[in-house]
Image (tube, rainbow, N blue to C red; front, side, top):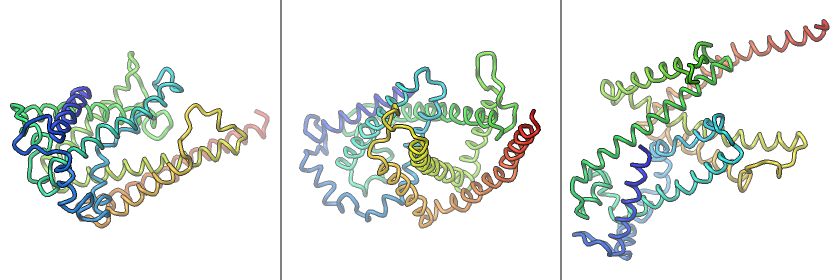
Length: 320
């Protein structure tokens, strides 16, 4: 599924570059100078101000969510010291190549005023070149992309529920594995909830579904913020314990600039949600939900941990 999407984007980049540099003939062919004019004559790179970038970011982050799967998959990697750094580096350059270059080609060929009036920028470009059945091809690609995302989402959610069960944060039944090592109970519940969430896109597309999508975007950004904060605390604790930074197999480049910048930018995006009517519901629902989770932890789980610690101390004091 992922390979179909990648091949399509590569084809789009090649065709788009061919149009811009005049290698492909179209009715609206543009050369590099005309492509720059398309941007500069329509308000420049930020026609509605730089703040619009943050207002739109909460919707854009859905395209980037999933990079945290690298950390989740680390537990199943045979050689995490070698594979995880390689996966992180590949994610960075692939993001730059597939996203940034594609966006540069899009804004060079289509003005931002037309972006909302065409069905799909990809179809628009392919049609200009004369590729037959461009819309049908893109619908097929989108379907495979959605199935790919659904597959990775099921994997991540199932593994998280399984891990939470093992740590005492969810029912013990979710930690059971099949003979092939698959947490079927966790997978079944995850799949059921996913199907119910999908139904809301048909039954309550402008209310429940929109809220779920907004909360998911908020949750993804929150995870990135916590990841950056964890990295900061990890490095400090690692040094405080007398360890040498050079012993780490993979070190965050430009530390602490990278995690601090990540945290601040994600926080700005969350704050910007308060100024967008369609996204404000995520704050109204997501923040109380997060507070409820932490309240549950401190009132039940944290108390349970303290009780277990007290039991260990009593056993040690009694000589057991």
